[in-house]
Length: 426
Image (tube, rainbow, N blue to C red; front, side, top):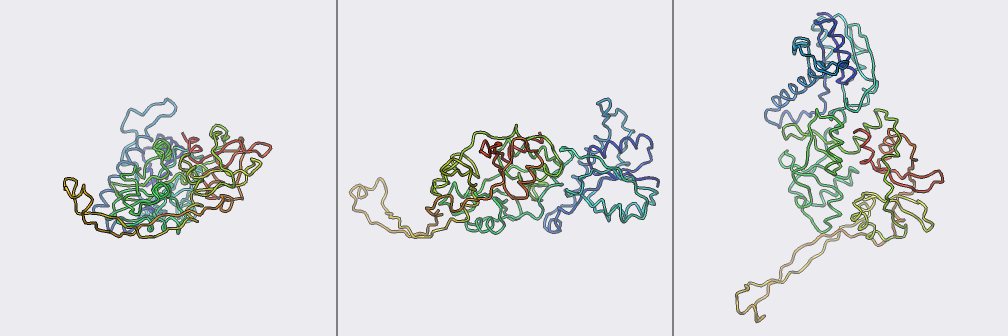
């Protein structure tokens, strides 16, 4: 065999492969996809998992062939099917080691590798290993990644933390606190049945059953979808996390924070001024915590800026801070009942027998303390002229979903929320 072209699936790499294929129809184009987001347990526990993956590969191959047939110069698809045949494109789940084994087995003379500069920041295979360990000469050309190049499998969180039903609020709280996360998928017998979040807890303080707290029939996304599609769904549906599924099989999860990590990695230099929310809900630093919780609920915010007596920004309070200091109070209530019925004449005369039923009740109690006692004081701030990727990086590094935007005089003028910053991808 002659040369082999290896692509990372980006528009740059696909276009370069198409140009090379026009020069020589004997080329084999390899498009390896990192398989590590599939756990070994999936193949043991999920019936026909191999068939599910095979169908996925066929979809990806058809999509790649369509991209390879695109004539960017004339803005049209090539009309001749024989220009790029299915046998010339090899799409597969595999590691760098699998690629090296393949080219060695096929007696390839040279590898042409077309990848983007940011490829190592995503869940792609280790192309550096191919470059460094190949016994065959490797020519490398690099381009720049675009938002539409990033797939869900490039950013998905693998081995996702989840909770099972039947379960309780305590189970959910423990999972959220131990893992410092705001929400998790809920499963039953390995099948996704819902999503449960801190917000669900705060909205239903006296509900104990997980099945009653969770959001049922959650919206999902496939591994081959683009990050742009994920951003659109997260924005339109006003949600913060998307379970990633293949044929109802839970593969992982993608959150707004993962999209922010993508924005940070692809280097978007656009200023944030068009994404800043100037209608800010804030609280005074002496506001009691239960009142802050109510304001958060009414404003539909997960975090609020805190101002001091002079109206200056002095901190940030989040729902995670509130959950951390809240306590679960267990007590016994008595419910008086009677065997009488509405059409029972003795019922109306109030001389019926009364039975007392005792049952346990749990309720979240929030301490009556001022918000300044628990707020975060070390506030990360930005200006209107800050760049999108830089702001996304600050959110990722500090594990926050909002940034106060201040003027040249260090006065609060707005808030940059991660949800709004996602719009830079659209």
